[in-house]
Image (cartoon, rainbow, N blue to C red; front, side):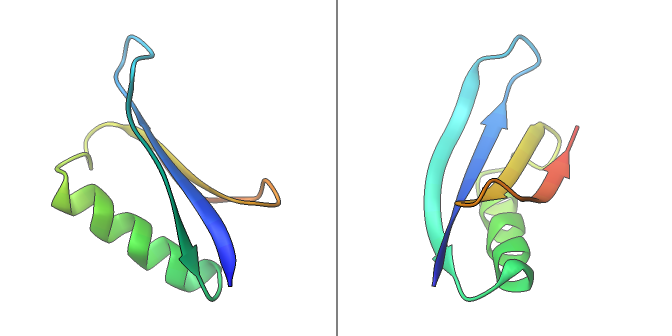
Length: 61
């Protein structure tokens, strides 16, 4: 399992969400990240999901 980090920002740079979760691979991490964004209604905010190795797997602006 790899650790992924999901971060959501307000336009002024304020962090709205900063949490980590585990996933088997990047595909699963994208699904989990997207679900979390939808649950918390952050799909219209700026967000990123990165792996523990620093690879960007999900991004929205």
